[in-house]
Length: 465
Ligand code: BGC
Image (cartoon, rainbow, N blue to C red; front, side, top):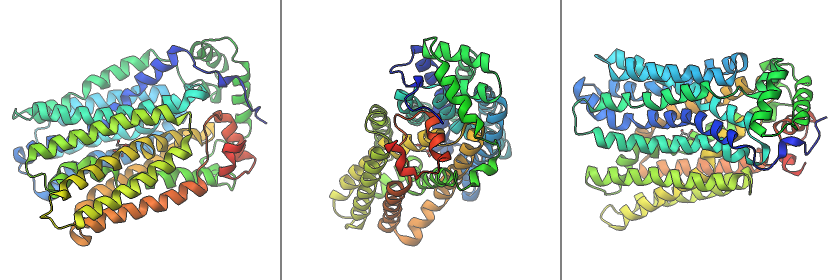
């Protein structure tokens, strides 16, 4: 059995672990930047290549298709070759995709292939970065450190809006927008080259001495024996086969990961991230520039509230943030639907819609945004952690794609209020899912979480260990 309260629970951890988390989180920045930049770039690409609306949709969604592929292939790779090497590999794929792929494209298939390549890197980085951070972080600040990744995603989205705005005066601007992503990609690769491998992954592959060295360095102490022993004990109970996830003991973890992955998307966040200017125009912000300015406002609220979430996640815990966040998202979506239900003549419409949208993003940013990626980096057993996270990540990107391509059609078929109420209803459903099935992992070492599943206990009993 794993001992509760072992050494991994030291308060701060050394400064080094912050540096490792911040450097790897550049992968999150690329995730945010590369998914956000297309909304500005597409305006130029459409003209330059005279795209039909179907081709436009294909160009828009190609990065998401790549991300689905990356999520599928990445899992086994991170378990086999290690988290660090996979992050370095993604930085190379990002750089090649940004420079040789997207920014130099001379025709549409070239562009689509470039964007798919970038998507593959996003799909792998989106879960490998939280996985790496979670495995190097000390228990007490694990939530905050893993949250650096989500913070970087939100910063990447805002930077993409700003770069899009700054380069929009130039005809070649879209090439510059794609090429800019190579800068953080190169820093990520060079930075990770100097970072250590995950000590947990090293132990799972039998490199125990190397893992001890790394742990001493990242914990800033020689007292790492208990942590090493806990990791080794945990490994004895695992077969390393992905089939283990279907066993009755681990099924609850599988359900939590896939359930949260789907609900993070079907509660509608990316309709706002990808279509905010259009939503603001529906709400009566007539000029393109006021709609774009309001969109930058949404991005900034997303960043600021993510910082608030990171401050709270290790204090109040994962469940309260999810529950408060989902309650707020549901109410904001109901209000947004009501605003669209009002007469379009009313000047109140624009303001109520804008405030509801900001509140919605704020509640996402303290809960579902960071906590989904955090929980999936915590709840799976070490030997299959990468593969299990990739399953959840696959569902996340798959549903991201589905919501992205159905949003405008839903608005046409159901109407504006009803579409937002639908996402509101799904947020309420997710609240109950979280209330009944999602465990509290705050203050638990990854090995204690594994031991909890092995003991066949209910997820909700986890916070009460
Ligand atoms: C989600 C993305 C979303 C982003 C917005 C992430 O956690 O996975 O789909 O675009 O948050 O901040």
